[in-house]
Length: 225
Image (cartoon, rainbow, N blue to C red; front, side, top):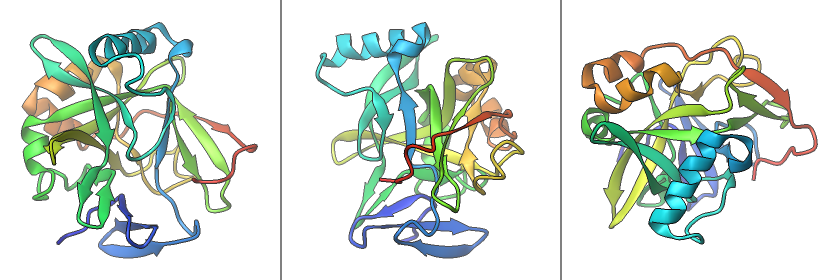
């Protein structure tokens, strides 16, 4: 079985990250990749509307906003007619002894695990920012300047009777590079409909560098899990 980037190895309680063809077995926080993001409805009307749509569709106790972690249920947006439709999905593709939470944008269209999803099952993960840790375990929140919502590109599929998603990652831009060597593929709001519904445009977006972000220190929280 080919292990993809961003795989949480359940049996070994560690992350395995594959970058530039090299693997690094990560235990005890030696190296980390994006594994949490923020969804806080009180910050933004757009996020609040998504949260309310999820509650109407799935029930008030269907999920909990806040910091979203792998295996948690969270809202994603999928193409439904002419408008994006909020759906509740689980973060991570469950494989034998592993949970895939990320896919490399550069190679997703070629990988057996992701290529059909790139063609037909693309989604957007709405957030109010995502978290990352540097090599000294310092925690940072990344947000879009002047924008309350940050949309991350994702893929989804149905596994074992459950809808699940993963987040696409790409090479870091200047705002991320001091902290980490990967970052989520952030989709500008003007391009969100193209990512969901325009197959040709979506392939092009896989290679576009994400916008510059605002990096805020979260020094009071230094633990990854």
